[in-house]
Structures are given as structure tokens and as C-alpha cells.
Amino acid sequence: MPGPLEARLRAKVRDVPDFPKPGILFKDITPALADASLFREMTEAMAAPFARRGITHVVSVESRGFILGGPIAQHLGAGFVPARKRGKLPWRTLGEEYSLEYGTDMLEIHVDALPHGARVVIVDDVLATGGTAAAVGALVRRGGAELHGYAFLMALGFLGGRARLGDTPVECMLEY
Ligand code: AMP
Image 1: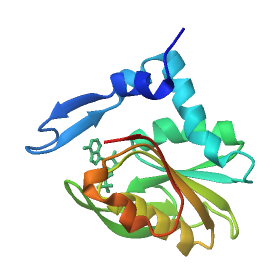
Image 2: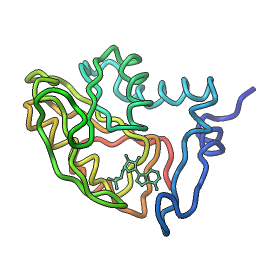
Image 3: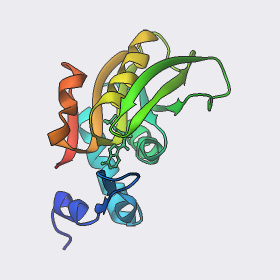
């Protein structure tokens, strides 16, 4: 019998020191993604808190967020909206500056991606400083959509990201 999901997941998140630059301990989820059963189970578990909540859209951040956000949208019966780095989306966009654990950039979504009143969950792999998630949240709200929560595979609690997400519910499978 497979063990508890959280333990199996934790065993397949690889710590890579000093990537992409010195001092960052990178949480590599590719071993977990490559496990067919684990990939399905973890996206089902991330979707579960938002089931039967009338979620209409999942918004994810490139690139690892996309890998999780697609299956989660399908589990929820929701559409998928990509948030991308500056200049990557082909149509007219809304943009928001954000800061990373390792740099700053701008995130964009298409101006017409979320209808007014859309019920949104934001998905990403890692909650670190919360700068990325807060920027996506601002983009979602600017378009008149309702932000119902965040779903992360893991949170790096020592970086305090939750404090930047206000009262919006935050669901994480693993805490570090
Ligand atoms: P932040 O805006 O600081 O919360 O950073 C979150 C984004 O950066 C997410 O899209 C993560 O994929 C990525 N990220 C930040 N820190 C790490 C880390 N230590 N390991 C893996 N990904 C990270």
C-alpha cells in the first residue's frame, strides 16, 4: 500500500542548493511530476479544498504553475488562464510588477481572460516571499473577478509569504 500522500510527496521534492544563484535552496518538483500516481494525487489534493465552490477559472504562473494548474482546472471543471512574464502573451494585457526571492519582473494576463464575477483560484508550486502570488491576485481583482483562494504545493514558511496575501484562503500541501 502506498503511504500517506504528504510523506510520499515530501520524499520526491529534491532540494538543490545554490540554484539559480548562490544562497537559494531550490525546491525541485520534477521527481514528483514524473511519478504518474503522485502527479494525479497531488493535483487532486490541491483541487479538493476548492471543489463544489463554483470555481470558474484557475490562474497559474509560468512555468511550473502551468504544470499543476492545468490538471487542477480540469479536476474543478474550471477554465485555465495563464499569467505570463512580460511580453509573452499575444493579445492585449493587464500587467503588474512583482518581486521574487531572486529578482523582479512583470506578470501579465490577457485583458479579456476573466469575465466580471469569475470565481478564481490561483495555483503555483512554491509560495516563497509571496510577491508573485500577490501580483497575480492584484491582476485577478483588477479585472473584476473574485479571488477565492490560493493553492500551492508547498510554502517556505520562513519567508513569510502568507502575510502578503491578506485574508484570502491559502492551501498548501507541504510546509518547510
Ligand atoms: P515568491 O514570489 O518569492 O513567492 O516566489 C514564488 C515563485 O518563485 C514561484 O513561482 C516559485 O516557483 C519560484 N520560487 C521561489 N523560490 C523558490 C524555491 N526556493 N524553489 C523553487 N521555486 C521557487
